[in-house]
Length: 393
Image (cartoon, rainbow, N blue to C red; front, side):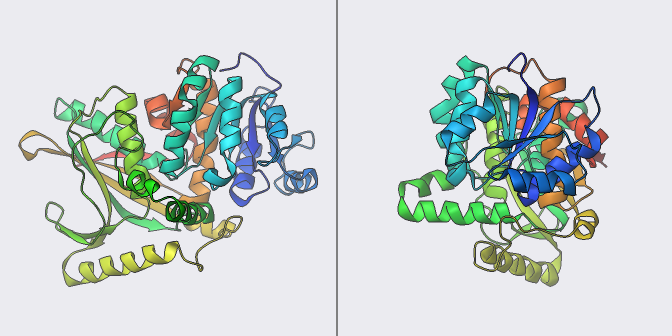
């Protein structure tokens, strides 16, 4: 991490829907003299000024012109700051030059990426550079995949306390979710499908649960691609549209932490849809909704729910750890806003603050947020971002 700079955090993409929410959160909670020095960046200074006024940010909040298609402007931006928080996706279309610039200059970087193939490409291209420059590159700091990655971490910490050891099997189950994934997530799915259609070699990477653990291939994982009756929970389950990124990040965390979950660790994510025939019918409806996600009718980047819709949203995630002899631990992670926008904007903002303030000793390289910041990030999310982490009986 850079020792000092003009700014501590630059919100890149502050004129977009999610970027504006991040800037609004920082303006509301971190605008004091002792708080981090932060700025807003985007393609249009006029639009940035309008956003600054609309969110009630201080009039002297710095505005920086930067464009994903102009590497010189990106270099000028990162040279001024200790960290960049990017909401400009799909990252495979607009993110590569910025990651390269941050890795080269020792600038910390955080994003909301849910694109595993691009992340693998960035790891291969920039891990060594980031390690030598001092940059901490942290992908997936929003709903994909923070509550899931930290949910497994918390489940394993609970297993160590109650069972005496980590468990080799964890089930992630979505019990409730009000408010869907963001337009950026939908755009990322479409971009990923389009890239795979052009380059069929990417299909194998997309299907590989260990795409984010170069050099390590673990055991066979549940496919999670069709409705199934979960015998242990007595409920039907349906595929979860974000499992293809979340499960990959969980396995990367295990690798980065030195395999505390074991090299035989198995993890999957599904949506709980209920018991009996009704649960089975609900599961089929989820499959149909997932298929529509990549279609033309889904949310678009820059669009999003109203303030009331964001504040009435929520999510409730269950993690079941299964140990020796079938002994179990169960933990819940819940959020108090809609997952794709209201909660995501708080999570990534607090990730940036945590990396800056609470974990200066985290080594350089390419990280998952949970592996980098662990319990200190959980505490910050509980204290500031409306998340709860609870052990269930």
